[in-house]
Image (cartoon, rainbow, N blue to C red; front, side, top):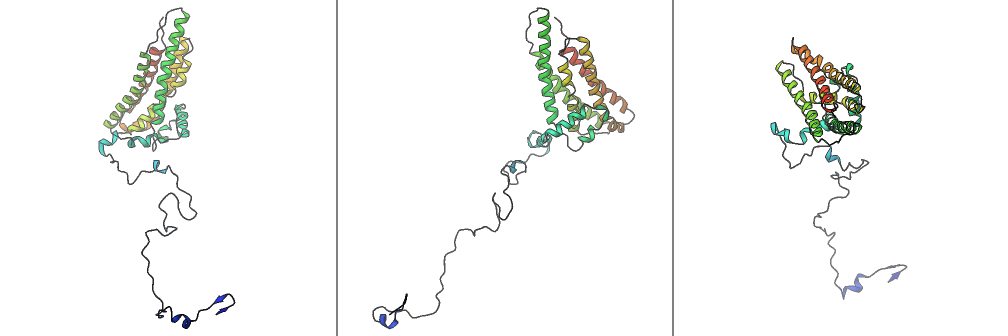
Length: 279
């Protein structure tokens, strides 16, 4: 019978046609284990982290070494052939490079060695040498071209200026620090090879404005510019190494003088070869 919105069925009225199962209490129902994870996950394992933590930078794999990398890690002497061995020496900001360039223009301070003692870089020295190569070749070519035009002479481009400048700057900033490294090691006053490369690389920056000023067609002015640049560069290297080389014994003075004269010789070579024009 019906009462209101509810309908009830008498068990006896349907017992004749439909058998009713006996009430045996609650029947347990079991479901197969699901292969889906509980949502939300208890521990986030991807870029999306639970809670209020911000998402991880997508490029952080370039700043952190990968723990599960399949690439073999080089060790021993073979490490010098891997790019990862030199990554730390190019990890500098523009502000760091500018600060070191500024220090190189004030050679009497002698604090550059302390500045790079824990973080020497090769980025600045590489680009300083590369800039000097192209400036020396281009300005040297322009000076010879201008002199030939003034005297109404035929002018031919000399490609040897570029190759000579590349050999001079790259060779000087590599061979001289290497020889000095071996000398200091022999006198029991070893210095870091990368620190020496960094010091000599930044010592050449003063030649950038010097080469630009050498375009003035006055020979006496070029000699003055070459002398001032050579003196500043030589003083910068000598004063920054003086304190360290003093521990090499009684011959430390001769080593400092040799370092000074080598830098002056570099300035003379630039003046004589690049800016002595014969028409």
